[in-house]
Structure formats: C-alpha cells, structure tokens
Amino acid sequence: MPQTVRGVVSRAKGEPVSIAEVVIPDPGPGEAVVDIQACGVCHTDLHYREGGISDEFPFLLGHEAAGVVAAVGPGVTDPAPGDFVILNWRAVCGGCRSCLRGRPHICFSTHNASQKMTLADGTELSPALGIGAFADKTLVAAGQCTKVDPEASPAAAGLLGCGVMAGIGAAINTGGVGRGDSVAVFGCGGVGDAAIAGSRLAGASTIIAVDIDDRKLEWAKGFGATHTVNSAENDPVAFIKEHTGGNGVDVAIEAIGLPDVYRQAFEARDLAGTVVLVGVPRPDMTIELPYLEVFGRGGALKSSWYGDCLPSRDFPMLIDLYRQGRLDLDGFVSETIGLDGVEEAFHKMERGEVLRSVVVL
Ligand SMILES: [Zn+2]
Ligand SMILES: [Zn+2]
Image (cartoon, rainbow, N blue to C red; front, top):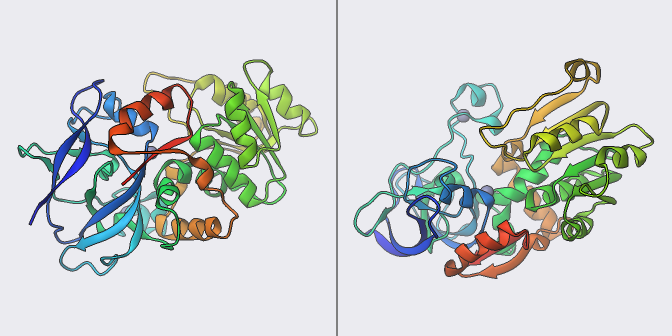
C-alpha cells in the first residue's frame, strides 16, 4: 500500500519551500523505500529551489541522507530491510561504455527509482538528484543505498552522500593527494573543508586554506589546514608560493566555481601540479588562461564530479575511518533541525553561518 509521509517541497522558482504530504509507492523491481533518519541541507537543494538546475517543479528536496531500509521491491537482495544505508546519486549501471571499460565511478547511465513519488493530488514530484530525502521516507533505486556500519551517527554519515564526499574525493580520488604533498584549497565551506580533511587523511604535509571569511578559515584549521590566508586582504598566490619554497602546491583545489579563483589555483600550483575544480560554475561563466603556461607548466587540469567516488568502495571505508576517529564527520554538522527548518537553513547557508544544517527525523 502506498504510504503518505511529510516531505519538503519546492513548488515554484524562488518561492520558500514548504512541508507537503508526499505519497510513496511500494517499491517495485529494483527499488527500495528508506526510512530517512538524517539529511543535510546542501547548496544544490537551494539551486533547485532557485530554478538553477531544471524547471521540473515541484521538487522533493534533500539528497545528503542516511537511513534504514524499510522495504525492497521484487528481486532486490541488496540492500535488505533493516540495513543502515547512505543514499548515493551514483547507482552504477554496469553496462554503459564507461562501466564496461572498468570505470564505474564515472558511469554515464546511473539508476534512480522508476516509479514516481507524488503529492496527495497525484502531481508527480521530481526528487532532488533522484533522492528526495527531506521526508520521513523516500523511494530510490536499490543501488542508491550503500550499506555502512550502523554504529555511525546518521547526521554525520548522510553528509558523505554528497558534499563531503565531493570534497574528500576531489583531494584523494581526483587530485591523487598523497603523503608529503602540498595542497591549497580555495573556498572553505563544506566541500572545501572536506577537501582539507581528505588531504590530511591522505598524508599531505602542507595544507593551505584560502577564503575571504576569517570564520571559515578557523573552521578550516579544525579540519587540518596548516596555513590559512584571507584572500580579500592578501594575494593568495604569493602566500602559497611563500609557504612552498617559492614553488607552489602539488595540488590546488578550487571549491567555489569562480573564474578568478580558478586562475589563482592555476597560478598557485607547482610545475607538473594538478588543479582540481570541484566548485560548480554558473552557465554564463568563461575563463581565459595563458595558453603557453597551460602547456609549459605540465601537470593536469581536472574536474571532480561527486569526488570521482564509487559509493560502494568509498562510503564504507570513510565510515570506518570516521568510527576510528581519523575523519571528523561530526565537525561538519553545525546544527540539527526539523523538516520545518529547511527554509531558514537556506538563509543561514547563504549568510555563510553554517557548514551543514542537518535535518534529523
Ligand atoms: Zn554505467
Ligand atoms: Zn549536495
């Protein structure tokens, strides 16, 4: 029997979100219904509400979530009801040209649930990133559920489902940060601080945090930054060179998505260094770079989508490191709120007051 639960819905561009009754169908073949325990508020949710991602309103928001599998559809053996899972938006298909070449972490045909969740009047909802987890329950593809150690705090674990994974993965998967490397991270919000935490985890010996907000630079120190520079007051490229023997960093991570910041990251890296873009640019942005330096400095200019993660490989491993006290996921949880706190959490996020507000159910 379909169930009716509460969910946070964005009905029209720019309008405040509200709680609505959401109808969750029974899981069909390849699907699972998950009891949501926690879901972080991510910039992407706000982008949906602002019409910046698509115009397929109404949206059921929320996508950084952890919970317990309530029911699975016919033929689903993994996960099983009762499993504690983090939801992911990279349920790999196994059959696309990328999966077939052994690169499932860049699958081009990821799975979502085939059935639709609806409003009480039957209007179909578009779930954010195919998840929709600001709700008591949600319907996803079975492959979107990644089983992890149930001892983990749901509020912390859920953050691996999107932003924190994007940042950690930008450092360790895309950037290939290793022991003894020097790293600069531009932008110290949730994703940037996760890139700092990932760099520390990987053994980077110098981690330079760059931001225009001193409060964020303080947060960055807590996640492992060895140096900080306020780029509104100082030239970050000069600062980074000064603290890397005049050379620049091995890996420069741009976690904002602004052309001027990308150029700083480009200039702040050592010869043969790597630039990783994990911030999301707007569609109207363009960038100009000295072409001879793109060639002459060697190295790599890379983009990091979802931290190049493979959820089945990365989520359980990172949860284990968290449980061992080696990765501070709790530090990303600035506050816990109810479903009715999401709109206010968007405003706090815009004002830069929080790393993550997390809805706890
Ligand atoms: Zn695939
Ligand atoms: Zn997100």
